[in-house]
Image (cartoon, rainbow, N blue to C red):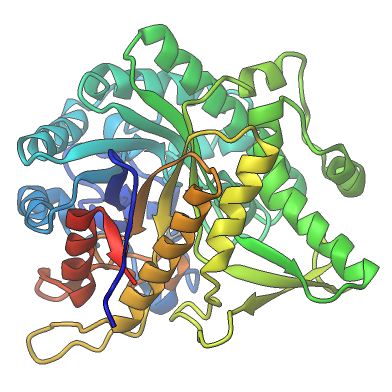
Length: 451
Ligand code: IFM
């Protein structure tokens, strides 16, 4: 039987993504200030095995070799995030030239290697000194972020032409301020909603600053949009699914694209509603050039009176024939297509990038640290195939980024889960591309997948 190649549009942007705290290490070097994650990992019992990002993949020191490896793997675009506290150790005020220099060198190294750099301003590592003033709950955070954004743009935006403002603001707001699983470890829904509102305003502010500075590239926001399916057709399960959907999707998408919050949800959360001033929603609703969509998994949702504020129980969902990932997340490739089409149909078919997709698998290395990860290849391929269908259905999908290029620090799970196309031996810091890295190189070369 002969194979068919599903081709992607010309100029489709293939890439890989990583984030500062998860790979850089050098947590207190060259003038870097303390972030909330530097603090959080030192709290007893908050991260599995007491792991920290102090060293992580030591990318800060190994950046030139890492970029050379990206080149060898044929990666056309690399998505990195900037650590706010490398640039502004106190979160505001004095700029740390050595911190800026690191990203300057990274961008130049990428361009020299023929790799397009894509930058994101915020991936959860808020400055601790500003956290001491209330963090994102403090309305001044909007201005703090704007000032930080301006500094980063002025240094890098002449060469970096694709920018994300925030990565996954739902995670920063709700895992950081409602469940407390993430830094700063606060458990308070009112603060979580206020954080979401200020992060959205900060996003709008950064977009405004970017436009006013005339750098002429693309800017957008990156949201994590899990699939959600009611566990049954009962009214209760459907309503619970709607509540979770409102919190994770509409709370972010509606203000960015429509300049309003989902009223039904605000009626439901009552006293937890954020304080909104006149003009806030106009600031949030800046025209953006793309939406970044991170998709990993789909859950079923059922009504549960013990299910927190949303009264919802979340259960991982897998399509028949698929198991679970090492994160115990279900696998449902069609879910990525549903999310893309949800955006297309409800938010004016904006340009989209899949800014993260991938999986942690129980990688079993051989004696040379080589990982034959057919399960990861199967996962990525099925998701790419579903995206091909979404494009055929009319979605404006412009690119796809695998999370992640390297195994790295997976937040509260420490180093126990591996998402990389490249294995990292954390004792020796040796990098070994997995089978999936070579397979992905082939996808990029063909600009498509064989089915
Ligand atoms: O590792 C994270 C990343 O920081 C944000 N998106 C999800 C990934 C996997 O959990």
